[in-house]
Length: 261
Image (tube, rainbow, N blue to C red):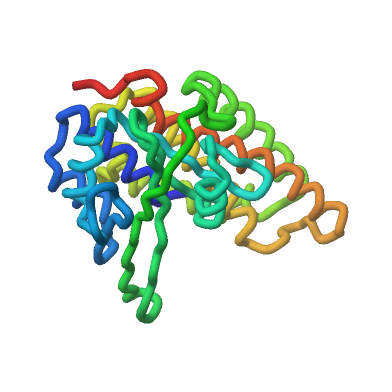
């Protein structure tokens, strides 16, 4: 979770654009990031794929007043509101953007080519109809902040008791690298988001990092099947809380109208 999902970048910078805080070119550049190119396909009024700048302008012209994020995984349709076709595509990608004010959503299809370290990445955002209904299981910023604090405390205690690698020096080194990167000016969200949303997203990324390190550094001291199962039981709800918090942060604009002009 050190890197923002593409859907988060599109929603956050799209919201900043709609709020008049950045130009279309600035928004498109931030969304593309290190990828080679992003295009938007099946946009109403267009015969084929178009660039992000045109697409964001067209969605605004159609009546879009905001963008929200969905980060679904099997068993947890986080941020989705239907219909089934859109939900299925978003679940396959494990992310999507839903426009607020118009019945359209965007799901990224990512193509990678080349060796590790020199990947050429192209993204096509497919526009699909969505149901205008409340998104599934999205907390408020306040709820997300409280859940994160509890999840981080509980997970750290459980992982330490099981002597999992993710709770020791490896995790601390990763956290130090995370903090150093943040201090060098890493952008979080986009201009105009309230400090609380930024704080919640940063905490969600820290919690996600703890989970990732625990998963990626072997079994630590949890060598028995029961101990491994216990670690999984501890990590799954924490991972869920972190994803819920990410969505709450990205959606602060459309849920509370909180982007500051």
